[in-house]
Image (cartoon, rainbow, N blue to C red; front, side):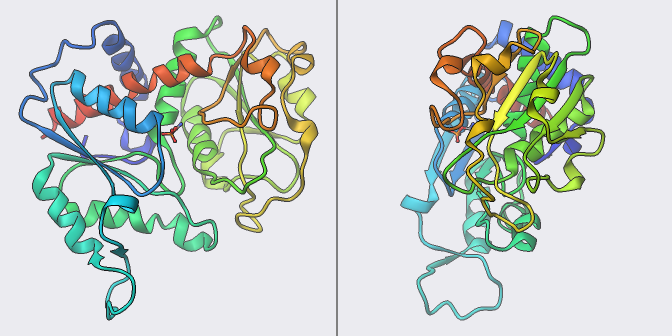
Length: 315
Ligand code: CP
């Protein structure tokens, strides 16, 4: 694998999930694979899980790891071509990414959307410029429209904990005070649509995701109806795709509670984290027996390790 930016870069998602679960059983089996290879993790935005789990995954494979919080520690990046750089930007992405490619065998990049210009965000301008100019394999650590390492970990978690061959998985919108990206729900939907699950997205009217990511999903606007019989509930807020980046109302009644869980098949509750307690998800859910959010975050290591292993094998 030379690029991991979406589910479309994966030849066989079932094999990748199996690989992740095998690595969980035997994390250090492939220590020689990464010997003398370097992973550079470049963050334009904050991270806890992605940073630590991907670093741990690389160390398990015997790699060296360098982390650069480029938004705080690097020179201010220019992204536009053909401009006179007489303003606040100091270094062009052409040189910055090219230089990083001299130091690393694989590069991971995190770059959130601005949520102001939909065309620009959905063109994945920043991520694609890194891919173009660094000239080494690139793994997405969450881009403007997708978070594939998170989605792979989510699928690994469902595969690991499912009690029926084809579980019912429901992605439900949840309230938030800030407009959040669509990357996690887009990506989760895209992966679930390719997995062997019965998949529903439920949201208030107006929060429909871009149809490119939801082909094959059932779409609902009735949370009680959608949750009935669910085996897994994936809770996440996202801002509107149209009008882009907007919050359309408080919709506080959409927060998941124990009362709502009663109609499910004792559903496991997932969230990518970080989560705002008692806004997106109640204390009673997060501290109760159905929440698997920490276990899910633990699986980020094995997802990242499976992807890095395939990248190392292709070097
Ligand atoms: N879920 C996730 O990507 O967490 P971080 O933003 O902390 O990396």
